[in-house]
Image 1 (cartoon, rainbow, N blue to C red):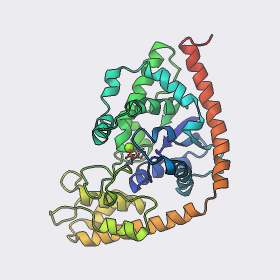
Image 2 (tube, rainbow, N blue to C red):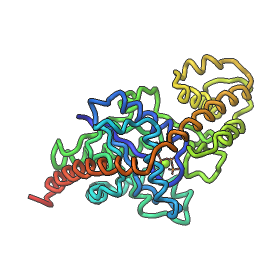
Image 3 (spheres, rainbow, N blue to C red):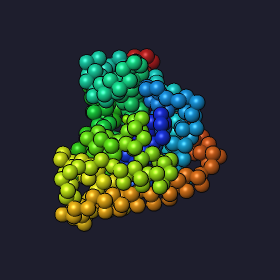
Length: 341
Ligand code: ATP
Ligand code: MG
């Protein structure tokens, strides 16, 4: 069976960008491939403090993250669905070290997210932040995952994971790792035209990020629905005065059209056609604000209905499965590189 895998860091409250860019494609794929794939949705908790976080809130944030996966629609009664915490599967770190030693420093240094995040946190740039994409490669390769639903910002890291897998397969054994599908195939698998990049509401040339300290730039999944609607109403747009989908010249308006199509589960082209030529940005904002408000109220009610006991049960079986699969792969790698006979 092929494996589909994804994760969302638990450093901060996830945003609408995470929901639309990672949760939704994963949940849709989990339905579509309920019987022909293993569906691994994990919390990359060890990735969560590559940049500074509030450690006092961290544990609860991890548990909440798991409730979010369930509330987003992941079917926990399907035996092919596995939810686990990265930190409870030690093979991730062990494989990471091995992969580190087969990753040229220059190649890892090209990661643009490291450059961006290290300039944002210039007073506290850690080795962990630099190494994060290689731990991510281990997260993927341990499970032979072919499809990894991700937002656009993560595709460079996926390409690195592919390069590492190809290099190690060439050196040791053609069948050591499943090489994840390239970007175009991933996007097609998600039934998208392009990888998704939901924009910041205050600076739509940038992506919406959960670690942003500008509260108005992001819709957090725990935002009070009415507060979130206000954020949409005050989103930065442009002075063109006509509604068009044009991410280069009108990224703010295009972002709103994109959010509306995803929340309403409608084809982007249909939403664009509905609004083509209209001139009232206020009307579009009201429509999107309404959709966001309804989405959050509904989602938060579902989250509130999930108990800690349910989460514990899901993790117990997910973490057993993950350790079994990951340990078997690690043993294979240890054998290939000569650590065992
Ligand atoms: P941080 O600011 O802490 O890096 P983030 O919002 O970038 O947070 P991640 O945990 O790094 O979130 O990414 C989790 C998943 O969400 C990844 O698949 C990533 O591609 C996706 N994602 C993040 N931001 C967006 C966005 N604005 N649009 C679409 N997908 C996104
Ligand atoms: Mg990120």
